[in-house]
Length: 426
Image 1: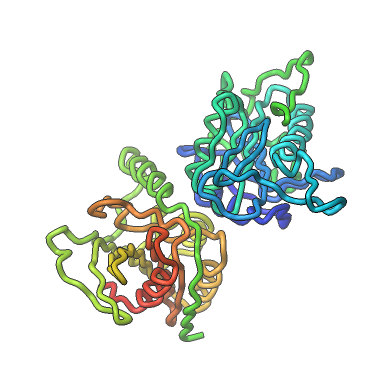
Image 2: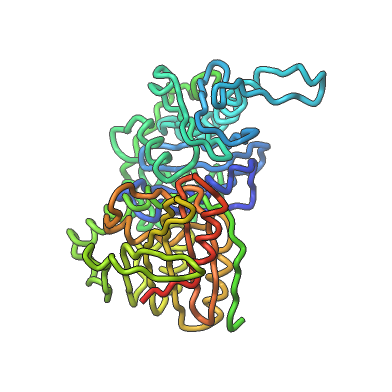
C-alpha cells in the first residue's frame, strides 16, 4: 500500500491510524492500494483521518477519540456504546452536565454521517465504486464487539492495527474486477488532487487493473451512504510506551518472504541467522539484569522484512551497512519480560541522526522482532503491543529496544528497556 500523508489530524487516534497503515508496506500482495492520510477535499469542509483507495473499493476511515482506554468496547451502529460494561457518556458544553445527546452516547452517529458525505462524493465521481467505513477508536482498546447484524455490512469499528485493517478490507464486497488505474486516479483526484502522481506501473503494482478495464458507470445508479445511522554519540534513555503492530507484521513478513522465495526475485542477503535452541542456555548481563538470548540475526543489507512502516521505507530508500536484531527474555520481580533489540549501522553520522529522529517519533513503525519472524519463542509469542520503547545512537549506529511485560508492570518494562540498551548483540 502506498501512503500519502497530509498534515490534517482530525482526531487524537490519527497517529495510531497512520502507524497501522504505514506498517502494511507497499505492494498488492497483502492489501494494495493507496492510503491518503488527513483527507480534506478542496472546496469542502469535509475532513477525515484517512481514505483507503483499494482495488476492491474505498474505505473511509473516521477516527473517534474515547475518554479512556478500554479492555472491551461494545460498539453497535444503532444503540448505546459501552466501555468495559459502562455506558460511554461525554457531557456536552451547552447544557447541564447531566445532559447528553445521542451523538455522545453513540459516536458512530456522527462518524457514519461524515462517511456518508464522503460516499456521496465518491459515487458522484464513479457510482460503481464500492464504499465501506472504518470507525477507528482510541486510545487503546483490546477488544471491540459489534452485533452480528452490523458485521454483515460494510462498516467496522476497530482499534487501528495492521491486522484489524486487513480484516476490515474483507468487509468490502469484491467487485467483478479490480478497480482500474483510471478509476483509482479519478477518486484520488477528487479527494486529494496532489495524490495523483502515481503512474500506471505504480498503481498496477498495488493491485489495480491496467488502463482500459474500468466498468462503464451506470447512469441509473443512486449513490448510497453507509447504513444509518450511518552528535558522535547520543544516549536517549527516555522510555515511553509504544503501540506496535509487530505480531501482525510477522504475518506480512511470512507472505513477503514466500513471494521472494517462490518468485526468485533476488539473492538472499548476507545473513547469520539465529541461534539454535541448544545454544540458548547461556545468559548475558546488562544493566544489572540477566538476559537469556532467544534469537539473533546479522545482515549486511537492509531488506523489507527488517522493519515496518516509515522505518521500513527509510531503510529501503537510504540503505545501511548492517542490521543486527536480537531477541531476549529476562525475569524481573517474578515477571517474564520479552525483549526485541535492533541495531542499524549507517555509512555516515548524518543518516544515523536522521534515522534516530524517525524511530524516536510516535507512529513511525519499528524494527521487526527476529524471534517472532523465525518462530523461536518457546511458548507464547509476545505481541509487543504497548511495549516500553527506547532508542540510543552511538556514532553511526542506532539501537532500538522494545520490552514487553505482557501488561503486568510498566515500571518493570521500562527498567528492562533501559538495561537492554547495553546488551551485547554479538
